Length: 376
Image (cartoon, rainbow, N blue to C red; front, side):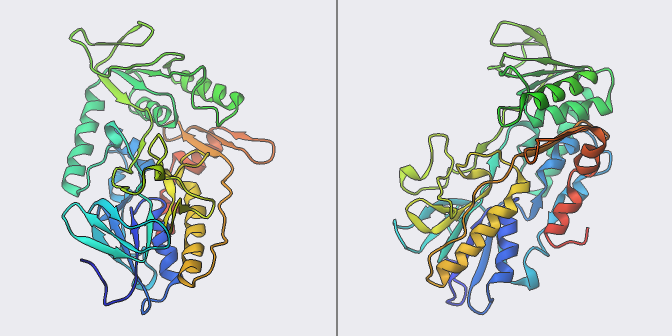
């Protein structure tokens, strides 16, 4: 059992876009002689997911050298420790109670405060292995698949599918690329119709076929090298990429059943405390909140969580509230194009110049590395 010299443990489960920010902010807010900050993460490095789409398609730029970011500088002044592993279960009682988590190895970690930031589980190229050797093999295998394929079908019409289409078109002008999406417009209703129509126009300009109001239920390619849509349309395919969105990584959340929504998201209050468990907080992709899941929002999640953790430790009522974030999105269309939307002011949209400067060229790597304590 991990019990650091009798000091209360503040345990963070998940070192992704929200968890890493919680760890970094906590390391400045808490004194090391009073508390032990423990970050439990399946991978020994931070994985910058926005770079993975391009990284899966091409070796150009060797993004794996930048997108796998060391955790060495995450804790300010070294105030914190890492545990490499996966949590299998949580043991505690309802109310103002401490508890412990059990790792898949059988080891247990006591906590005074628990933070759940486990992120999401993806399919296809974004289903990233947990160790470096398997990750390297995974990247190499997918790059080869994209290189060898001539007829690529992207199932789902959100930002992931759009960015894959742009990256594929960057490496080849001859591959057939098709997006199949179950709604009347690409993306979803979080964004206005004029933006969604503009995105479709831009991707079609790059000779990407877009099929709307249809779906692919069976991703298996037939012996005739086709797949069939729900409406009975047959598409030639030698590579099918699932872009249907992720599921929350919450199978280990063994609390009372109503802790999770029907879709397995963690229910939280506006203080980002888990319902019925005031010593457990949650943030990031895995919480039930009416907003799009985007890493740009998670510094706000982390700030609320850290402020309220300090209040709980001081036996005060948490008062920092998360009110949500305005919706914004930048979708890269290859390295030099893209579309962006902000829901503030009049709801402006931006094209290739702004979008490539903000997202496409750098994939937000510079900002992310700096937020984790690296100069670049």
